[in-house]
Length: 513
Image (cartoon, rainbow, N blue to C red; front, side):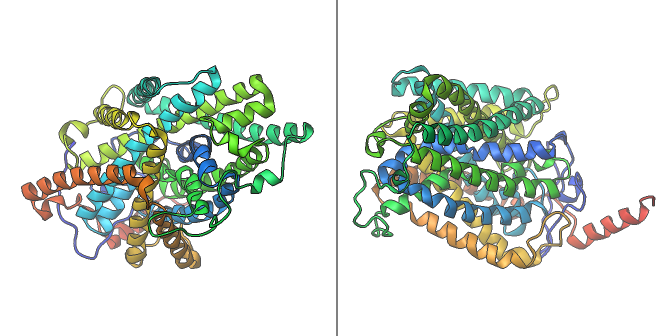
């Protein structure tokens, strides 16, 4: 797909006054607008996926911080909720596929927007691998009672990635249907897990209040310290549990061009997904921590959450609920793949991505960005091949998948703080007087989160970030050399005043009841 590109006038912004008016942003509607309110929420909730986050990272928290580390979770939820609210303000004004890339490109500069899009792409690629690796390394061994090898985990993860990409390429409608079912199963399954673990554990005398505040095998001295300049303290490391889990809510915004009434639906989907995941996730962590028989011994397990569930509920009930969790994790990877594909397509539509001519097409038979799906699959397989050979692959994957969104979120929040006065009013979502406190809270939280990623244990995630950034910089340099800075201007859009006048005229022309 191609379009004419003309630079925006200095000091102007654009807005979508009515759902589907993509012409005001320089685009035409080529994706089907079918995503409902629940489907939008389900996309955001599935990406966050408390089942995925807790099953993936709880073992690392036991080793770094002990069960006491779960009490960092509410603080993370508050911080990420503030970020989601800021994102909601932007999604209500610029409801376009490629969300963060679009926002930064149109409000800051196309160059910064390109880097934002590229960082988002590198995040989505690595988090897709991290999520699906959880199925292969944690859930399936617990379900079928085997000790998997790195080679087996690699092969299974690769197969799951192929299956998800095939579904995304085949049909958006069926992808959403599968995700809706999986999200419903996750909600039901996680609630059942919380209730059953607490009730059965209490009846059998397997719950311990002391376990909730146990440091496990972590030394008490210096436990609550911030740490040194090169190493975070034990309790600080526990923030990674929530920071890895409560991310990806902006995936709902990446489907804005396919969502009905996106200015209203998308912001609500994002903050509701964070809040629902935060509350339910914390209850689940409390249940698991209270039912932990021996935190020190459990820290040595590759599947600590599954071990606790089966210890309390028995193998049959525990296995049945683990099947639901596996479905939820699969849906998480599915949504990540769909989100990554949409980003590749959106950047290719603006001729910003390598191979954009092929990647910007929509398949006539399926109505999906099929070529972009193939590209995303190939890159995830390459990332999997790099990380799968490491002895601590899961920790490296989830660390990289936590670091990248923190960088992305901070850039977007700073941009919004600087440019918010230039944005037009919105009928979809607004923070009102709470806007400044929310922005400050989001900034404080994100700076603190990034400060955790210091020390030698995070060397591999930083190398991944630097390596992918270097690749992106090379391609961006080639774009600037070939086109010049003016060649990266966003598609022609109406000004705010023109958009308002268009909306007013449309309202005046509408028939009165």
